[in-house]
Figure 1 (tube, rainbow over the protein chains, first blue to last red):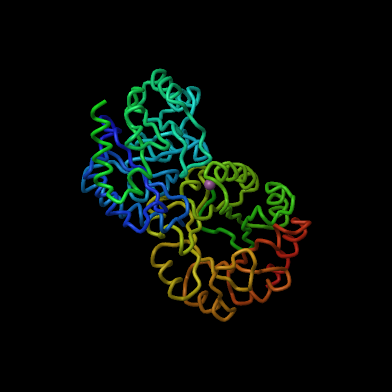
Figure 2: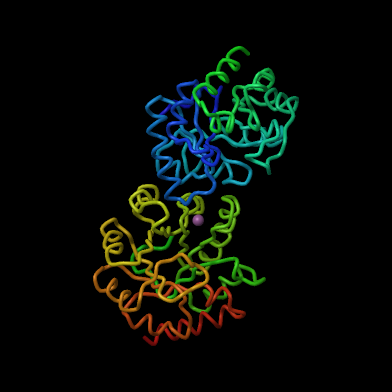
Length: 211
Length: 211
Ligand code: NI
């Protein structure tokens, strides 16, 4: 169990098995952690419950080895099943209040928001961090609302929660994202689809730390 | 909360919104309960978590009104979220042991099985009842294993748990099913797709009670 306070959200990896292009998920995540990823979210929409559970179990072995928090997307049952560090809920997922009731106060709960209103509602509802996006256009989450960099900055300024930006973030644009004052950048394809996930994560880490 | 012992599994309704043909889900379930349905399972594979949660909430209002147990298919998080009476897991869902750990001993947990081996494993693992099928060919669950009536009878004879048969059960064949000695018949389209769900449930109830 990772302590909830003092979590480093700076390089937040979101999985997507469909972007691996033949690479192994666990090896990819492990290399990414060695390259500087500070937190891992398992996000897999196409799996049956049993497969999701098995991947969560295996991923937790990796994140536990490195002392990195594991967050499960959407599924509080899977988060409970593997005793993950937390849950991430979108606006189409379980309401925050219900998720909190199921998971208790010790688990991290993050909420996807794309406006100051949603951000303040999540904050008032007891979210631990905010995922804000999509910042740049992305092929992995086509239905996401979009948030500009000034919009991201407004959300950061008007809330007191850690803010993680998400959506199309790559080495080439991560600096612009971090300069808004947010606490972290979430990446998917920039690391998962990279032929060298370690190198990709390392480059991102360096650019984030320079900010 | 329905007491776990003494549950009447005789006419077990499984929902499928795609078979409603324009009818309202809640009204259909309510009429089915008035017609004799003794237990309701919410099974909806195509919904996002928030919609699943909302349907579960609304359905629970109906089942609570009639003192009928509500079982959630697959999703322990939804079962917890609405304080449902139980969870039904298939072989592709969460392992029984994990579901039990999440839900605790007071919740009903049913397991889909299609062989004596799976039935005995579920029994040893602490299942409260068995769902056995598919007994007859069905359009709603094409990928299901099939179980003959003699196979159903063997599972009932070799286990001590309540057995609910499922798969293509209709008024025309429910008597043959119940004559194997099982504790109940699960129906989907026979009630959900019926133009008169009350009448359909009533006919099924009478045929089941005659056995
Ligand atoms: Ni429920």
